[in-house]
Structure formats: structure tokens, C-alpha cells
Length: 166
Image (tube, rainbow, N blue to C red; front, side, top):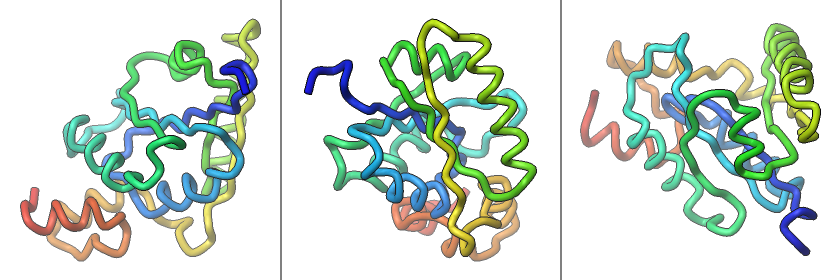
């Protein structure tokens, strides 16, 4: 299979921190794509709690068993520009509720309008209903206030935060 035939998806986010919701979405989409690039960015609207280096480390440790299927990278600027650079033809997104759907629908339309020469399809997966309430911002608040965040994050985050609380 040549590179142009590969199904490459970019899964963008701040992952501050990565949650079991993110983890579940990636695992469920592994059979849909030849490669998933988890693209860690800084959202200008979010006040990040953890450094980009820390977030990348957690993601790599979380998905270490999939070195050929999952790549972790950093991006700045527009997601659509990163997709072009990586020759990705899919954008992977997860939605938890109707509000997420409306946001993602509008974002998909905007991406199509911005970039009509490089066709990128947005693939939206519904969150697992048991994890649909989990949001990184909620996990950050639990961590800041000394609550038990361990139910909401993969073991790579639990191990490191437990030994070195922020």
C-alpha cells in the first residue's frame, strides 16, 4: 500500500490531561485507520494545567503497545494545516452530547470551506455512554482540589500524578 492509499487520521486536542474517554475513542477507532496521529496542541481558550511535554509523555506511555498504529505529535495553528502537513485524509473527533455535535458540525464545515483542495473527512464517534460525562476540565478541577481523579485517567497519568502531585 503506498502512502497515498493509507487511511491516516489526526485526533487533535489539548489532552490536558488525557482521559479514559480519549483513550476509549482511540482504541475504538484503531480498526478504522492505518495510522492515528494524536495531535497535541494548546487551545488559546484553555488555561493548560500541564506542560505539552508532560501531556505527550502521558499519551506515548498510554499507547506504547501500538507503535506502528499511533503517532504522537505537537501542532500549532490550524488543525487543517497540520492535517495537510501530515498527509492525513481524516480528522477524528468524539462527541459526548448535542452541544459537542453542533460544535463539531460547524468546525467540519469550516474546515471544508478553508481547505477545498485537500479533501479531509471528519469522522465523528459517539462517546461511550459510561464515559460521556468525562472532560479534561473536570479532571483538572478534581486534581486541583485533591479529589480522586484516578477513575477518569489512564494508568500512565495515575502513576505519575500519584507520585508527584501538582
